[in-house]
Length: 195
View 1: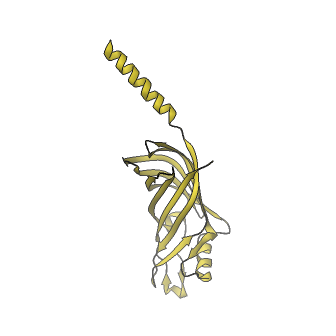
View 2 (view 1 turned 90 degrees about the vertical axis):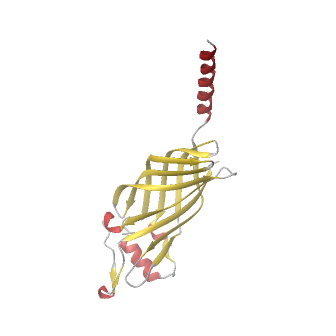
């Protein structure tokens, strides 16, 4: 009888704790995002100047527990070369069909795997990446830290092939300069609760 009473109290306590953990809306406070690639002439890097991320997250015991929904939106024409080259930026925007598809988006679908250690969470998620008019489900690795301010810091990198999204890697100077098909997207976003 005492054992039954103990387990009843334990279940009641756990259910109360679960009920207290609610999802909260967050939005991007700051961000850094870059796109790195190669060419037959030299490696190149472009920075993304306009990124928004909004989502609904669950924090439990000081760590990210769950993502209910999240959307990342990048303005395509905010991608600018580190060399501040108008010609390179124009070529990048044309390659990404920026006039027809002014934004690049990634929509959260589900969590594939989670590893947690204190306030750090390593999470692989499924998301739909929409780029230059083509949408594909892809995996993203998220390294997540929650800080003392209640903010969520998400970082990681993603390799993609332009050809997977119907983008032909550009060729310039009569074929002397060829851009590599694979690019690497590096990102770090700090999210704060929406008040």
